[in-house]
Length: 69
Image (tube, rainbow, N blue to C red; front, side, top):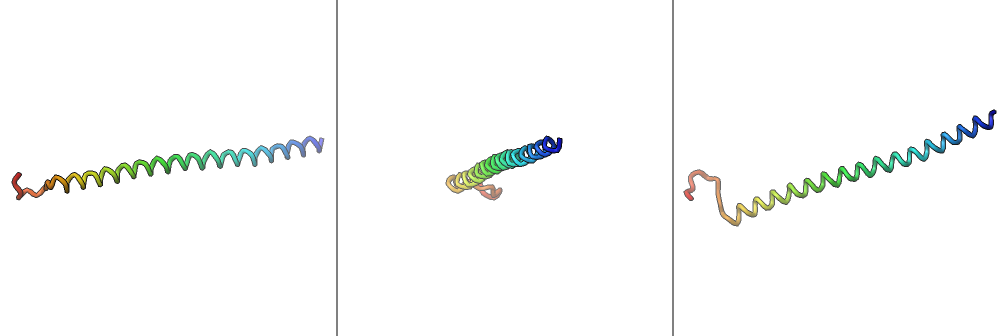
């Protein structure tokens, strides 16, 4: 009976280690995906900002209410 208990304890320990490794891999991949998405959104927002600034510079338009036209 002690051998069966020891075997079950060893099996539980193996399952805990393997499950922990799998859990860590899942969490790190989810975190990597979240960071990649945030980086993509931030890059797109920066590109929009730069594009808008270039558009304003090239057209020479102004928000100055004293300027006519």
